[in-house]
Image (cartoon, rainbow, N blue to C red; front, top):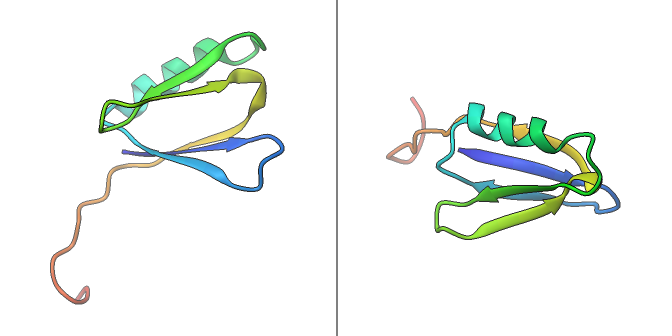
Length: 75
């Protein structure tokens, strides 16, 4: 699943590929929203931890994992 995290003051967003479900990600985000000292934490598909201070989160976009297509074009 692809998760995009917008960071305040940064023109680019963080893109993380994770095995967590959208419900798990939303629950982790709800737990830190409103607490400026909290840290939003995700683990990517390679086991790396991504930590973002809650006060710097502008947005989080949770997308469904897309099936990879085989071939040269979609018919």
